[in-house]
Length: 216
Ligand SMILES: NC(=O)c1ccc[n+]([C@@H]2O[C@H](COP(=O)([O-])OP(=O)(O)OC[C@H]3O[C@@H](n4cnc5c(N)ncnc54)[C@H](OP(=O)(O)O)[C@@H]3O)[C@@H](O)[C@H]2O)c1
Image 1 (cartoon, rainbow, N blue to C red):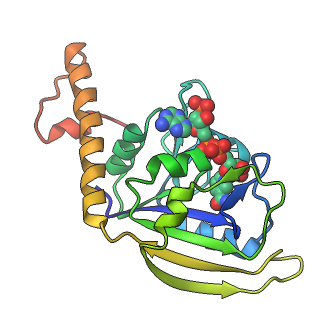
Image 2 (image 1 turned 120 degrees about the horizontal axis):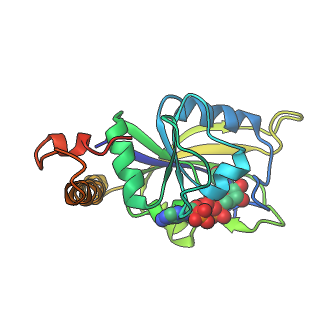
Image 3 (image 1 turned 30 degrees about the horizontal axis):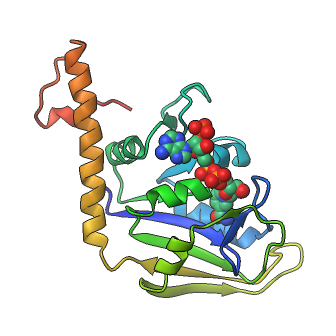
């Protein structure tokens, strides 16, 4: 199980994150921070964010949540998953120390109980037409979590539309959250294994090789 599950998100002063399935701003320095933070890692996103980005992101192991198994054909680095627990199981099997939840609003909310860290870009702006927001419950959690300011950037014409700061928030109960993730991912893997057994399609046994039987 990966050590950190981090939601990486950019919000305005009121928790807005999106408008008409797009970001409400153009901040290139923050995109560079996002790229650097997530490169080489597993990333989990909702189907609408996948569509907003225009596909899977290169150099990362993409897990795209949808109830519809026909959104696209899964490949090794761009995979459809249809539940929170399947996403966690897939990320676990992928290995690595950290997995990122990259949005959008629904997906951040669904993973909120399991996330132990936020990398939050706080944009000095109020997006007038926003229609996607980070859950109020999540925003209020930030007040209880340990905060560490990573960087501050001014607005720069043609580069960063608004000033912003990047803050890391760490959960006080990170250990419990890791355990919850583990339990959920294992439940998924066990159920999957049982289905494989029931169908008689695998010789997998309920030992350590069980997890390998769920091949991504
Ligand atoms: N500011 C930021 O940092 C940031 C980052 C990312 C996105 N955004 C913004 O967020 C907005 C999109 O957010 P959103 O809430 O509308 O959409 P979303 O979270 O990106 O995607 C929602 C979709 O994901 C699938 N999904 C979610 N939970 C699932 C589950 N448990 N099981 C199976 N499928 C599940 C469903 O797809 P199906 O309908 O196919 O079943 C659902 O309709 C956009 O405006 C985008 O620009 C902002």
